[in-house]
Length: 384
Image (cartoon, rainbow, N blue to C red; front, top):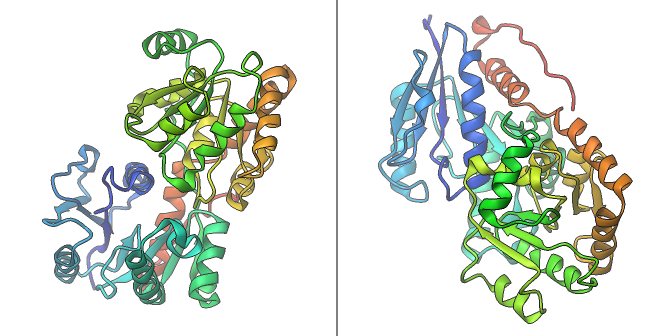
């Protein structure tokens, strides 16, 4: 009988190239470690030149991949490591994984955007997802969906057989995302030269983020009735959005903040009068809940996943209807009742999302896959 049961967590996507998955991996692992039992050992495979200090834990062993995750060499190294460790459970937090590895595979499904929205990906990416996606999902013993919508979309492309092996485990919100004190907000306004009232978007400038709709909605508004829009999350110096804003006559009504340090985001959200998120497709949507957790009323696109995670705590708008965005923004600017109502709803809803809950549920998934002689009862997290 083995003395310990072993988990291999493939964290090779814990890099800035995969921002949402990077946050998922780091946040989940940080909270998961204290929940490990004495008879459990966690091995974590990190990307090249990456160190995660909190992984220095007596029940954790770290390994470093020598090649980028997108290469065959990296997958071969992962397979050899797994063969040496012989884990009982192998957790792949993303589709980029060896198909056959020792241990029972747990796969986290964040989205299937290359298939559900092929216009935003290359032919090679779509082909990879169709071929490798089918094989990895069929090989997985458990699928973790970050939302009901993500799992439903996954089943639409990969078949309903996955439903029997799937469960939803929502992301959590880091405790740092909470309303910030007035002095911190005042300092941020001074640092970034922000006015007392401004609208905020945080994210990338990729086409599926649909920021162009916000710009056109802003252009439809009377400048005397509108607040400026602050755009953060990417280097805007060469972005096509910047040229589009100039063509729309918004040069003085859009504030380009560039990339914002992670530790500054809670204060930026807290300072905003309202947070706008017009994305055309999401698997989860971290910024929506983070903004709500910081007390910023949210207006976001009426995607199924946004309906699911906000549960009425945000104003939902048709993604591409510029007039509807204009009306929603005006309501946020002129109605104090609107602002206060959505602020309180958002704070209450965001408080239900916890990394502690996500970690407990994930560990429970692992333990379901242990040989029966290792099985222990675990607490099932409350439904969000």
